[in-house]
Image (cartoon, rainbow, N blue to C red; front, side, top):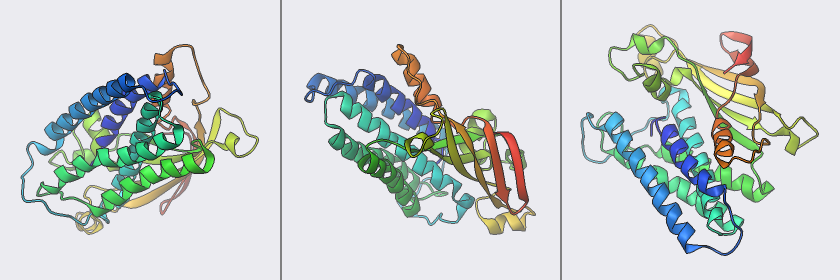
Amino acid sequence: MRVISIVSSILLITSIQVHAQYADTSSIDKKKFRSLMITAGAVYSISIVGMYELWYKDSEKTSFHFFNDSKGWKQVDKLGHFYSTFYLSYGSSKGLQWTGMSKAKSNLWGSLAGFAIMLPIEIMDGFVVDYGASAYDLAANALGSGFYLGQSRLWNEIRIQPKFSFQRTEFPALREDDVLGDGFVSELLKDYNGQTYWLSFHMDRFIRFPKWLNLAVGYGANGMVYAEDDKNEAAGYHAYRQYYLGLDLDLSHLKTRSKALNTLLFVVGMVKLPAPAVQFSEKGTSFNFFQF
């Protein structure tokens, strides 16, 4: 799956989160359950159609096959799988809780749903000549669902939250095609050089710490004009990994009387907001006061 899944995740989660604002702990309400399935199904269907139009429509097709992409893009794309499946599991669980299902069952079935939602994307990849289904993508999907379920079972809450950030780079202009995107929106989805994935630790849930401030560790990569290192080296580029340690602003404790605003705060909370961080790479160590 490509990072465009982030967009479909946000759309689906937003629709589920809107329903979850009215959560009820009574027994399962069939009308609510039906409403949830119709809303989520419609949003997901639109997202899948959008993905096909953007990613697969003009791709050369072949018979279903697997493809070993474990070394591509310094594994940044795999973190996209992990991130997307985590939030699909989270959103599915909250939606099920809104219908009246118990929290324990909702977390279990929500995690399974998060993994299942990603399967059609992997199947579509399997029929494209340039891609192919990936066992490593499936493993990353499973880890994302498991990361949500594991925290739910261990702490009955999310204390370590995946987040995403992006900065535009010069690398898309170095490709004659649009593999790395052409324009901000497509680059956001396709340029792995600009993407950073974070784990934001809600420290106040472990020790005495400001509720509005988290500690975050991040991972990204740079110098990737091509997916594989040997192709980059042959073309005169050098890809390398980047690691981050920094602060993150936590919006999860903010609650308002507006359900729409609460949903917006939740969605914004999926993004790593600019904050001080130290970057470590083979290029050395650097500090950025507004690392995004």
